[in-house]
Image (tube, rainbow, N blue to C red; front, side):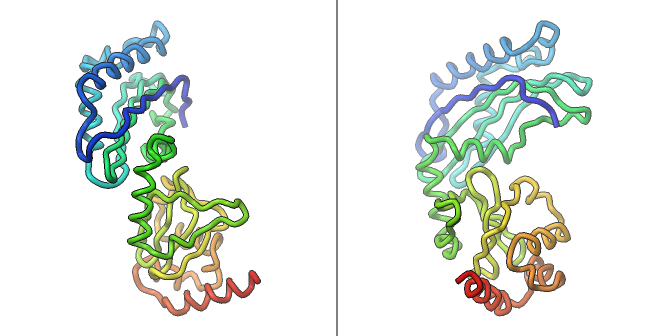
Length: 261
C-alpha cells in the first residue's frame, strides 16, 4: 500500500442530532485545511492539491460533512486529489460522523503517496475506527454500544479476561446466523451465533477484511479462531447462510466452558 507522509485532524465536536457544525467553525477549518494542503506539498506537487483542483475549500468541507450526516451510526466519506501517474503524491481529506443522541464530526487530512495501483494507505473503515477512539467521541460511541447490547444482549457479557478489559464495540456485522462484534480499533473480537451463543475469537479479525471476505474465507476463520472448529466445515457454512443447528452450537459452547474450568 501507499505511505502517509503527513497528517493532521480537526475535532469539530458534537451538535444537535442531524445538524452540521456552524458556518463560522467550518470557515476556520476550511482555511486550515487549505494551508495544511499547501504546506505539505513539495514544489513540484502543487498540481495535485485541493486548491489546484479548483474546489472551494469551504464547499468541499461542507459537502463531505453532509455526506456523513445521519441519525444513527458511524459514517465516513473522503475526497482526494492524486498525481495522475502512480505511485505518486495525493491529498486526502476524510470526514467522519458519529450519530447517537447528538452528531459528532471529525476531519482528517493527510498527504500520502499512492502505491503502483493507485491505492491510498487510508481506508474508510480505518478512519471510522480512528474517530471512534477519539476521547471527544466517547459519549456518542457509548450510546451506540448500548444500542448494540439492546439488539444483541449476549454481547453485554463479552470480556477479554487475559487483557483485563471489556471490548468497546462500535458495530455488529451479521452474516446469516453469525454476528461479528467489532471493537473501536476496528477488529472483530467476538462472534455471536444464533443470537444466543457468544464466542471470543482467539485472534481478532480486521473489520475491513471482514466486510470483503467470501463465505469460504469466513468458514476458515471461524474454524481456526473459535470453538466452531469442532463443527464440520459444511455446518459452519450453513450458519453463515442463515441455516444450521443452533442447539449444536449451544452444546459446543457448554463444552468449551467446561473445558476451561
